[in-house]
Each structure stands twice: as structure tokens, then as C-alpha cells.
Length: 490
Image 1 (tube, one colour):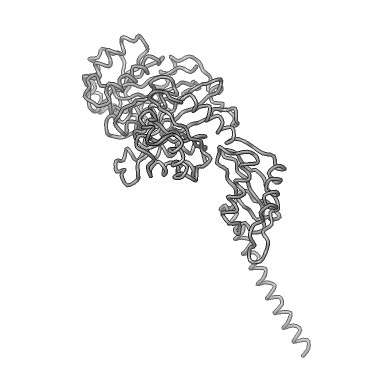
Image 2 (tube, rainbow, N blue to C red; image 1 turned 135 degrees about the horizontal axis):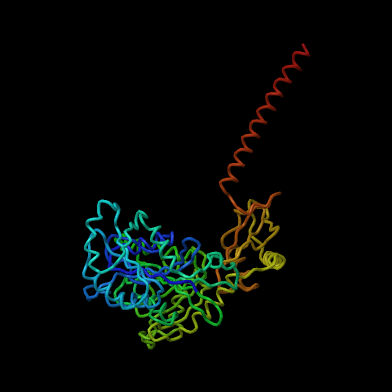
């Protein structure tokens, strides 16, 4: 296990900025508005060949003068309890605050090593006399840093890793191979206040992220690691995705962008729908985002305990969902209640089934037999009086399963016939729970898998210029030959 280092402090002192600088990422949202961070954010970091886990926490407020103050404080105390080393960050511009004194007293009682940082010190010589009030805390040494510009951060990190046990970076940096036995990445997506954080806590087994009835509680995309039956699942709790026309706040825009990016990295997206409010247009729009990115998908109809079953039963609700989201007909649908835990134990089992097909690979012979049989039973329509011929087919990628058919007229294959071939592949392989991609390429002497790339277009243009030049030279040679022939006749 790598040692854990927790960043603590009151709101708007630069914890997330320092977190991003040390981890060399933009994982944590940063804004001038206080109270941006609400949940614990974990990330791996290294310095001087030593690896450790860094934790970003919400701002400490001893009084309940913020709507989320009590829940943020609970998350902070858990981070302090789990950490091996604590980093207490204060604001060098705003000066010492009563909250700083309260937090300093709390950290002294932990008996853990504490590093005291004064952030936002861009000019050490100019602000040296202005930092005297911080010494009233009774601390021998302060580290004056600027997280935004990196001033003094290197010296602080060198002293920090000197206290940490030796964990070689080479042993921790090896990433698992991308196969069916690796960790399964899951993104929990949906509209605001549909129960994403409640479901993340339910699957994780404890109150890991802040849950509140107020919409927009989650801002960062929080990763949680769950081990179940020897299999690792990486859950990512995301912010609620509202309609574009209703989003005006800059911070909310960044939160939604991070939620959309999480679908790019995930293997399976859990699309949460609030059953008590019914299926909305925004739910279908979010499902469209998952379909466009090609990840596996599972519909979770949450808050099923609040639905009046006499008005609409489970079958009727799922039938309506299938009608509205026909483009995700392959995605399973489960009615759950994240609050009571109803049917939540089935989610990870269903994720494994979807992931198994999502990574499925088929040998080329079987793919060709399926396509050949499908074309034999139902041939494609003629293109300008000529028959469309299928020469060869192969699977070229997984996650999701991707197939390429080489034909004589790729642009002439109708979308309905493409859908027919995809359905044949689903039934025969089978791939009933995962998206399937099918592309058509023209058969040439050289198989070009990369498609119409910039390099391919450049070579094609160069070849065209060379052929044009050769044609001109040949025409000129023919003209001169004719002139010579005419002179010889005379």
C-alpha cells in the first residue's frame, strides 16, 4: 500500500490547485468561488522516485454556515483518519482565520506528521513581514509556496517524501493489460438529483461521496474502487447533466464536461433514470451521449420504491423506455432503489455480463461465414445496375466489437442493410448486450485500415500531381513527334 497524504484547510486556500500541480493533472475543479470541492478526491503522485496517494478534501468550516458544511467536514475527518501525513494549507493573502486555528487544534490531536503551508506567496521577500501572524499558531516551520506558479513546491515535496516509506515507482506505475481480466471502468451518469451519489455509496459500501436532496451536489468526477468476488470495479460518480440551454454557470459547465469525458474512458455507463418523475427527454439525450461514445450501457430505473405500481408496472415502464430509446435496444434495464438497496446487488453482475461481450473477439473465419450466409439469404440492392459484392470481413477491434467488410461499392450499402448485417452478427456470435460497430471499405491492392487520414490524403494528392505532370510530358512528347514526322514527309 502506498502512503496517503491528505491536503486540508479552509475553503479557497488553494488545495485543489496544489493537488493538480503535484499530480500533474487537471483532475480537481478549480475556481475562485469558495467551496468548489465537496468530496474527497484521490490520485497517485510521485516525487524523487517515491510514490504516494494524494487526497484533496473540501474546505473546513467549524460552524454550519454553509449548506454542505457538516457533510464536507465528515468527509474531511475521514480523510484525516486514513492519512499517514497531513498537509495543512493556509492563505497568505487573506491572513490567519479563526477556522485555521480550529483546524490546527484538531490536527494536533491526531499525533500525525503535519506540514504547514502558507499558499499564495508569489514574492517571498515582499511578503515575509506580512506572515508574522501565522507564527501565533506555535509552529516552528512554515513552507511558503505558490501552488498556482509552483514557487516553493519542490522544496516542500522533498521534505515530504523524506518521511514516507520507500515504495518504488516502477512497481506502482505498471498498468494492467487491457483485456477481459483487468478492472472494469464504470461511469454513473444521469440528470441532477436522480440518485447517482446514493448509488455510488451503495455499491462502495459506505458514505464515500456527499449526498443531498439539493440538485447539483456533485461537481467533480469522483473515482471509487470496489473489489467484488476477486474482480475490481472502478466507479466514477459524475455531476448531473442538464439541458444546454439551462446551463449558464461556468462551474456547472466544467462539471458537465467532466461527466461527458468520463463516458469516453468508461467501459460501461450506468444511465440512471428517476422513475418517480418518469422518462424525460433529457434522459434520452444522455442515453444518446453514451451511444455516440460507443460504451456499454445499462439502464437503472431508480427510486422504484416511490412508484405507484398500480398505475404503471415494471413491464410497462421498461416497454416505454425501449420505445423512447430504440437506439440502445441492446442495453439491459433494471428497476432499483439506491436508498433501500432494492436489486442493487444485481448491478455489478449485469456489468460483468455486458463487459464480457464488450471485450469479445471472434475469429475471422466465423465472421466471414456469418456475413456470407447473411448475404446469401438476403442480397443487397443493385448499385447503378451492378451487384454489390462482399469480398472479405474481419473484426479489427474490441471495446466495442468493431468489424470491417471489404466491398466493391462501400458508399452504396444502404443503412437498412447495414443494420441487417449488425443484427445477424448480434444473433450468431452472440453480442446481444453490447454496441457493435460495422464499417465498409473498398477492396484495393493495399488494405487501408486507418481510413481517410491526413497522411493518406497527402500521398493521394502527391500521386495525382505526379501523374498529371507525366501526362503533360507525354502529350508534349507526342506533339513533338508529330512535328518531326510532318517535317520528314516534306
